[in-house]
Image (cartoon, rainbow, N blue to C red; front, side, top):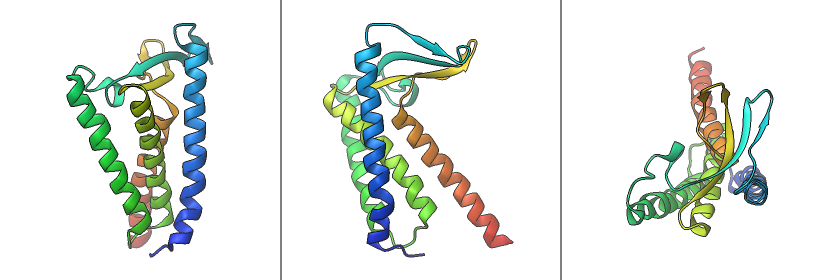
Length: 167
């Protein structure tokens, strides 16, 4: 199914603007309210708010790499990937609306973290932690949530489309 550029922009623009705004504002709040300060706990310690800076990838992978290599991988290569993804989002001939929205979420999450890295010497601001007792996630941010929801929608969407085609 071919989606016009106008329709793509109508789907992507609000997603990108709102996604960036909410994520960047949440990170500014985390810096002002949590950096060097308290840790908050909610819902019987299921959700914790605590400040962290991540110089690696997901869950800190690659944090111990040399700084120049971290820059190449997590800033330069991610920038190239994001540019390619944006071109794909705008010009791909075969894309359904669900895939467009899902990849749009991946893009906005990646782009917001890219902005962090560009402004914070390669670090991303993280502040969310979830779990029960000692079983906890790593510390993450809303941009990471966008990426994971987008990836989940891609997987679910493909499964759903395949199921509809075979029925």
